[in-house]
Figure 1 (cartoon, one colour):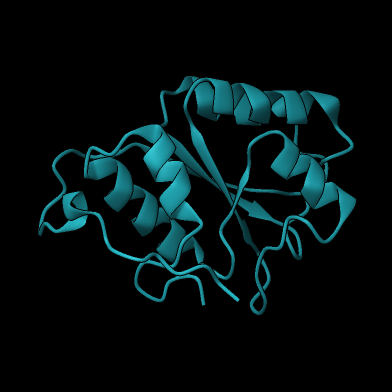
Figure 2: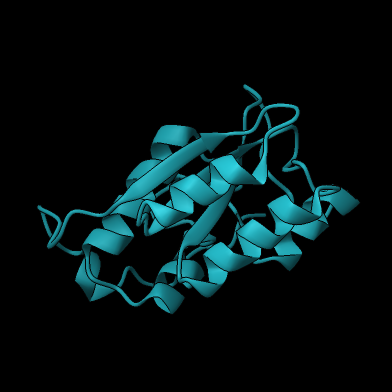
Length: 147
C-alpha cells in the first residue's frame, strides 16, 4: 500500500500559495542526454517531475545522466519520478534501473499523474516548506493523489 500522511502540515492549510514555485517537467525519451537535464537544473527549478518508462526506469546506464540527477539533489532540487504509462505507477525498487534512480535521490511519485505531481510539488514548495519536508511529504498520500 501507499503510505498515508498522519496529518496535513499546518503550512498546507491555505487557499493561495505563499510563493510561486518553479517546477519543471521532463519526459524521458530513448537517447536523452544529460545536457537536457542539466539545462533544466541550471534554469533554477526547485523541483522536477521526471516522466519515466514503465514502473520508474530511465537512462540508468548513462553515468552522466545519473550524475546530473545526483547534482540536482545536491542543489536541493526535488526530483519525483512518475510513469508515462496510462496504468500503474512508479516502484523504484522493482528493477535495477529504478533502484539506480533512487540511489541518486529520485523520489517515487507512485501512481501520480503529471498534473498531480506538478500540483503537489507546487503546493508543497509554495507553502514555504523546507526541502527536507517537501521530500518527506512527496511520497506520502496527502489527499488521494498517490492511488
